[in-house]
Length: 206
Image (cartoon, rainbow, N blue to C red; front, top):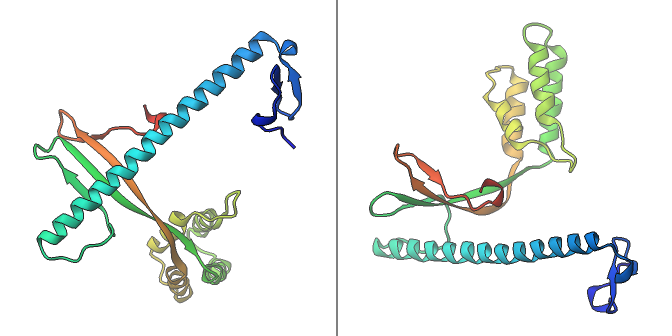
């Protein structure tokens, strides 16, 4: 069991295996590296807290404005249900709240896969190999055992009139479940060409 920071005696450092190592036995470069990493992590957590508060406060302000606007026109007030875009008066800045649904499929997805496999078994002409590759890729699972929702739904765009295929597409539609949603906050600034460029809030995009 790893030793907690509160139980580390003075003059010792804890290594990755949870062992207590006298500081006199730790190389100076290892101490400097440890201090650097801990400092970066502490600063990152402070920045994370600032962004978390910014997001919460901004979504709260937007919700309050949406309620005020709804009340102005006699509409029922409530939580943000759909996407919202707000522009500054001069049009230079834009704030968007987008609702991203988390989608999943129930057991009827396997029914659809069985029907599709029946179709593929009988089709021997045309672009069967290409279609089979598209379907196998769509139903492939990742390391967490999840299928690609976009690829599965993309199968419905294929113009195939076989009755079993159409029944499979209906099963896919019926199996789709919304298991949660997330509010995405994006802030934009208008550029010289009148396009809107996002103001990055992701450290990787800075």
